[in-house]
Image (cartoon, rainbow, N blue to C red; front, side, top):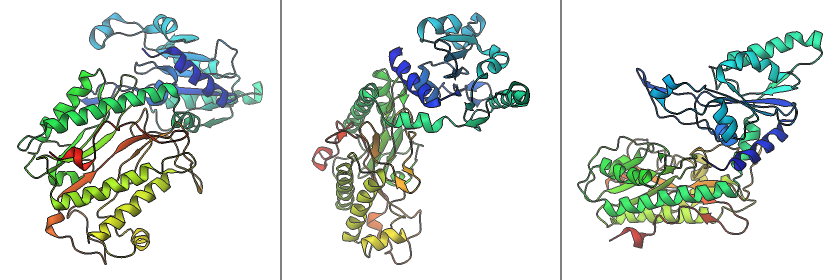
Length: 439
């Protein structure tokens, strides 16, 4: 169980931002895989961020309009031995009160009768409409009843806002505890990449490599992979979200592995490495790899306070396009190619995303017309790539692709922390220099 003070500090900040609005943050529900079989439970990240409570169906209330000692209320599934025989331990009301710094706790089945009481005196409600269909009818019904009483009582929660802007702005800026956890997630993820690169040989199946990397995650005590691991050999690497992972790895193939672990408190690593399975790049593979590595290194150097994610992307993009022009896969002026998006058959995604409790973590990239400035504590991925195949048409005016280039897919991705002075690459232990990848 994580240090309760971490969550207490977050709740205090969240309550201070709510003003006199009542915050309602639900936990995740179990999701059916098929028939009566469910996916492994994964807690809602916003709920976890504020509570550290890892059971389904709970509902947290944050009530800054109430007196101290009554501002954090948690509704949870009751202790029920017959249910625990099937689905495992539950904390229950007493367990929550004794172990999670909760001020007030109730059984979940009491929520319909008690919610109205807890909303009394609030100026409004902070609840994300459209995301929690099991709970939304109750919230709206209770709100409506308060509004109907307004002419007699003179007071009711008059409006509803989304709590996301508050929470996601908080989650975007990682504190020292979160940075420590993300260092660990990236370290374990990097170890797995190094392990699988040393293990891989021609003739293996992609699934053999997937098993090796994911076993390391589990051996290190993590929850396992943070997302569906991508293990793509040869032309499969040109499918960005390839997850079949069941093809034979052939001599001469590059293997692209995009995989990261998720810790027990949900902090994630997200690393991509591409290497020659036989230990030797072909001439074409090396040419593309050098372009991408140069683009990534240039982009990482731009990760500093005051810059923004758009500029990081543009530095990588210009480097990629300049290199592709040099080797003849593109023709024309770099700026014109960008303006016309005439590169999009070879590079079709952004250069990175926020990283944290979610792999594609929350937080704005721009505020209206302005790009959000990078600040210390933000963590983002930097992941340029090139994917050469026949899947997309060559834009008008660009050269047809020679056969020698086709089937090469390369991406290099690192987890990068914005610091006060110099950038910190959290995933640095996963090798990416040519000299380290060849044998």
